[in-house]
Image (cartoon, rainbow, N blue to C red; front, top):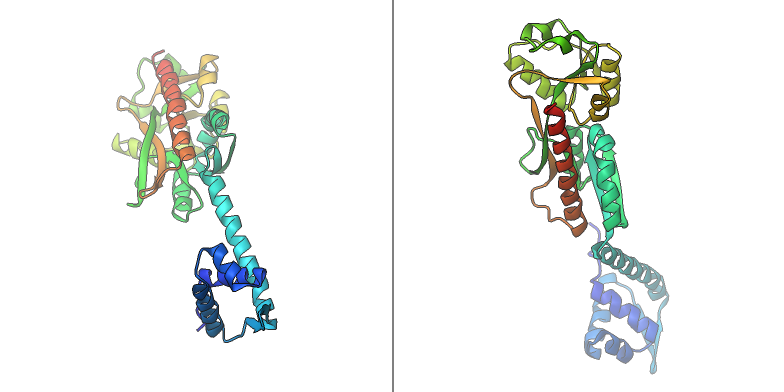
Length: 311
């Protein structure tokens, strides 16, 4: 079993006595009595089994063992002082670090606007982004590698706290020349014979899509499963199949007429997006501001989606 570590107060007393070569001066600097300092040094020597300080007449000398121990003690105190300074910097307004996990879609379409505004308020705060599916981000959150995870509401551990940010609706997107654009209503039998292009089969979005179709009595036939929304849009635009995405992902293409958004079914296929954190977490000022900005930008996304759906 390793020996118990010395008390920090003992270490400080030893360093001050060694620097001042005086118990009296060390006691004054530490705001202690001389006897208290002497008691600390004596206890430290007994614990270590080594003589650290010698009294030669009225002079105070550090022994050879004391010099070896003194070098280490100085290093310990320096590291502690540096740690305190770093924590102070983290707690000052506008500084610190935020580690964010987010889906690839959010990284591409939502986070740029959020980070641009966040930088204006917290220019010295370091932001680290870790792209990944919602389940991956929750795992990183659990291992304390993330502070906030942005993703789709789903089944999550009890220690997770979910703060809603916005909701969206998944739609079919097809090329302007696709036969479906000429139909007044899409019947269920059309879906089974169509090549559907969906987001990654391991994602929460895919799970929601599959559950939605199964509830409607349709067996999902996904010809292509891609991990990039841009690729899904391009495949649909060139007539390779029917994509399933949120309208805010394809807002530009829909406005230009390159893609047409169609409702999936009479029952909406919606998702709830939000921020996952540890249930006991207390937000820093920067983290709270980040979430507030997320809500503001997300509101703009909801309004954009509503405008697209009304067309």
